[in-house]
Each structure stands twice: as structure tokens, then as C-alpha cells.
Length: 216
Image (cartoon, rainbow, N blue to C red; front, side, top):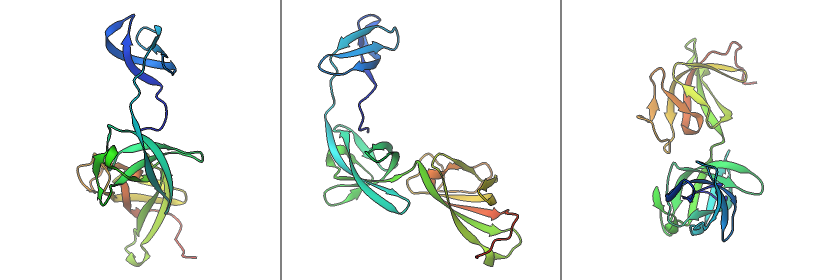
């Protein structure tokens, strides 16, 4: 799903592929678009069939707040929880992940665009990552939790020692979000298990920080 004009389109090339579409760079749009074949660089004009789109409401959640915007989505497309798309507004450009799809009287995880009323999402360019830090000296009453703002694509690995600002910790396990896809388990606890920050609900780690923490 996108709310921007495509820069490349599939169409036949009269020079090298008259019977089958190839990828073309869109040089100018209009009734007769000007395109350049990426295979042979031949420039020619062709008619680009525009896919019909529908406007849909989008709610984007970010750092405990949310805002409303709208996007144009291809009418023939199907949406699903976990998919990501670009939200382009006058104020910002961000990547959002679908968390829920609102129909007329219910919410669902998958539906055709034409049936969706509102797309609920969360921003995943930068995310707030909850980390539970356990002291290494056995003082469980000193367990603490921090929230680290990190890039959504930053990786965290079980067994690895990581530094974030003044904090140093060794990751023991990772709990994944409900909308995380491509993992075999929802809780990672084997050395080498890796997840990206935007897929993580919480990190559990041993506190390796050299300085003693103070609540003050």
C-alpha cells in the first residue's frame, strides 16, 4: 500500500520485449506516459492503466500518543496485521505497522481494503524498548526497568552484551510482540536468538553497569 506515485511500472518494450512486460522507469505521467526500459534504455510512450484507489482513515500510535491521517490504498488489495507501509503527511514521513483493522462493527486481522473503515497502526521507525535489568549480585529487590528509544530495525541478540547510553547489560531472553512475524517462538531464550526492536515487547537482561544505580 502506498500513497505516492510509482517511479517504476511494468509495460511492454517495443525494442526488446514487445510481447511481455518489463520494468520501466516512469519519466512523465499523463494520458500517454513517457517511460524508459530498464533492460535496454529504450524511451517510448505508453498508456499506463491506473489502479483504482480508495481513501482510508489511519490511526498511528507513537510513544503513547496517536494521530489521525488518511492514505489512498489500491481497491483490490488485502490488508493484514503485521504489514508495514509508508505514512506520508505534511508534518512527517514514517513507517507504520498494522496492528488492527476496523470494519463496520468489528475488528479483524485480515480484510480486503474495500471492507476496512480504519487502519490502526504503530510507528516503527523508532520505538520505545522496555528492558528489565536484574542485578548480577543476587539482590532481586534492585531489579529495575528502563525504556530505551532505539531505531526499529536495531537488532538485539540473546547472550550478547549491549551498551545503550550509560547502561551495559547482557540479554537473557526476549519477549516478542503479538504482531511480530517470521519467528518460531514468541519468547526467545537461546543464545544467538535475534529480534529487531520493532518486534520486541520486552528485553530481560543482567545489569552489567559498572556504577551503582540510585533512585535519586
